[in-house]
Image (cartoon, rainbow, N blue to C red; front, side):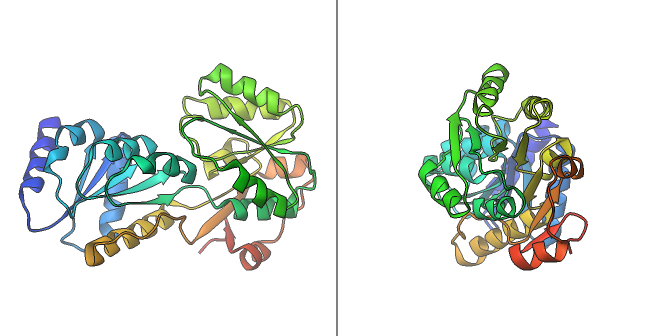
Length: 301
């Protein structure tokens, strides 16, 4: 299989008629096949689309052309493409804004992205409407993020909140120690998309600890809501792919990239058990849509 991918990679790189979109990843083959298939349905029929693992991509990066595009899946693939590619353009997907901002300066070629999660202001809007405890909101993050603490503090102040920040190592013991520390004066952890921090089951460990301490987290994704966070504002794969296609089309037709951004359509989901146990009164679905431009998980067109 590896030899087949190598042959296809070299074949596509050797033909100069059309640009190629390489989906650079280190995910499960079934997941990237599904992603590539969905993406192919949104692009013109003659689009040259090829999934390739990061290791194989590195070996053949010299074959890239000026108009090729690397769609990188996740922060690690984005970091790798930025460190080795000197031709083409990079569009990062399934990556947090703060992860993107941490890696983007390494890129010497045009770069854009489609962020996971949601803008800080959107999340604070919801929190202000349902959470009346004004104790500091804890933000724990790793060295893999670029976090503008002052900007976040200024925005939190507009909503009547205060952030308390703590940078942590990403091993399990360090993370749980950090969580225990910040919970001394906080009732709620306000999470950012941080792949390194939450990998290897650490997210589940944090949520279990919060449950036992009767504290809560605002999660970065629907998966966190299912696992035990209070709520999350996020985009689904369809919305991310639509934003990705907009950037691919602009690059193909104009030779420029749209700026990195969150998708236009965002969803909000709540953990019904935690909502009840903390006495939270939720806005109606229509109010969420009209006031905040968010659709609920069960009522999203």
